Image 1 (spheres, rainbow over the protein chains, first blue to last red):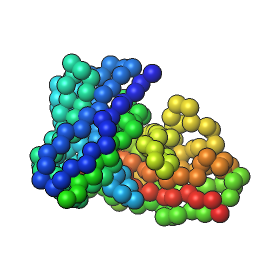
Image 2: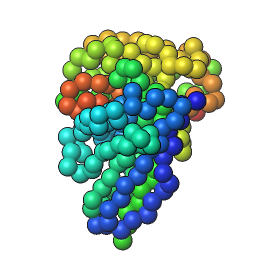
Image 3: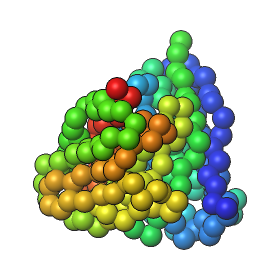
Length: 118
Length: 109
């Protein structure tokens, strides 16, 4: 069974760093792109970026380029999303999702809620 | 940048009725690159339709997708209580690689 399991909810202060994770199982992790999607409270879905774990080829949305870093460790089938300096506006639910053979996302993680507050 | 505009913002219908949700793109989108998702409160999105008209695994046949170019439609032929949720369209193209519509909320009348 394909599963993407994300790390737990985080509460951070502005200026702090954070790295959240997404562990894939039940399929060949290196053969599928993993994307990250933001959903701010009460808002819609925003695509942030995507990584191919086999070679770490990474693409970012212009809206998130330079704001976050996406990485992956194929040895443990895990993708990451990280911030070096969080802002209150980073408060959101973050989902990882597997890109299927075509450009759509067929499996999603359960989401990681990030709350940034002083 | 391709912008997806979904309409209506909210659709109020009763169980058993037919729902028609629209997704309009600011530029032509390949049929192969248009997908629809359903999201229920507190849950991650779920893939419903890919390639504009192909149902994802396990999706009931009351869900169907159609359209081409700049106009795409998600139709739910006969609404079940569990179908009341948020629906998003998504396209793949140039920068950004992916974008989503703002969503349509399907609520019980």
